[in-house]
Length: 146
Image 1 (cartoon, helix red, strand yellow):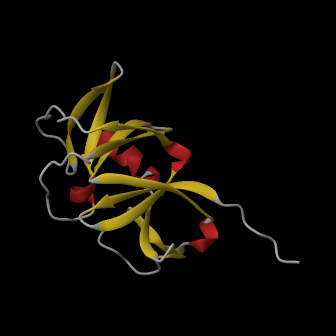
Image 2 (image 1 turned 90 degrees about the horizontal axis):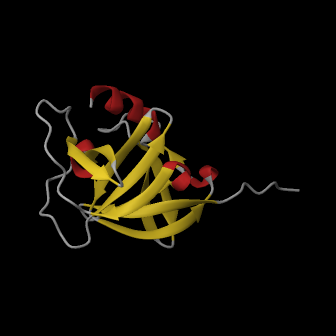
Image 3 (image 1 turned 45 degrees about the vertical axis):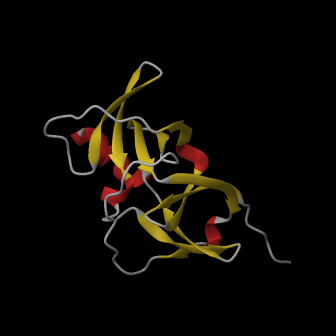
């Protein structure tokens, strides 16, 4: 008998025309894009601070963290809010596309070094190649700098 691994929800979103997914376990919410307030001397990737429901949240550019070209703010831009053990942060994405159910076993893990430590692998879902991210491992580094 083959044991089926459980499928869990992942949020799919777009950045620079590519499809990305992130496990929703640490995603707190998704909000409309607002221009964050710049912070002098902010670490690379951090675009500023945003007051979300009375709480200051460090906001990072998904494009910048992944080494992608900057883009013009569009009506579909969103900020995905994460809540991890070391605190909360937001990630700017071009659009939020769907909630997909994937098993962690479906992800083809990246064995070679990539340009970004956020990328953990790829997965094919509904004839789409999706790039799987994990922001939780680097979040404590970001939050200690920001």
